[in-house]
Image (cartoon, rainbow, N blue to C red; front, side, top):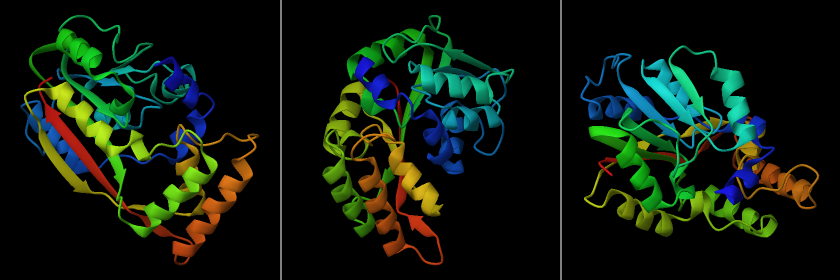
Length: 257
């Protein structure tokens, strides 16, 4: 976990600015997992622990829909940005904690979410912590925005990342390893839903999305300028009138840990 935190230090601003949100249909399915209507507010009595909350992109979407949220984030840079952006919200508490030790009381949560974060967790430790903090019948939801792997833009971007980013092992940690971890976490299985969620991006948003990644070089690093130059060239090869549709699907796994 310490290695993960260090990889994102100094990237909170670009992360907050350029990371995408999640589709409304995904949030509706979470409402149903809570026992509420898909088209209504769940009520402030539903308590969600958003673990690995980062700068609070998914946290904000939960708050918008009426949940009471505990945002758990171990990275000081990310947590500070989250607190500055959302910290005054009356239904939000921010915790300096991690997947294995959230700092939440026993049986506090009706649900646990991890958006773009679970691939950094140790599955068995997170499962134990979820069992501790969840009320009986509580659910967990693991959510990712995923590039469409077979799309030419994704394939070309992966080549650029391999060239300039020594720590690059695949997007979101590599799909095979992630699927194994998900099976280990849920044990008894889960519901899997995939949502089409293409993302309209200009050049700054496209390059910024890649610079927000854990493996990306930071400004001042030797590979930074060449990385940005190659990403800019890739954007211009695919863009039309200064915009492109970033090939993306959102995957949500919901079940009982």
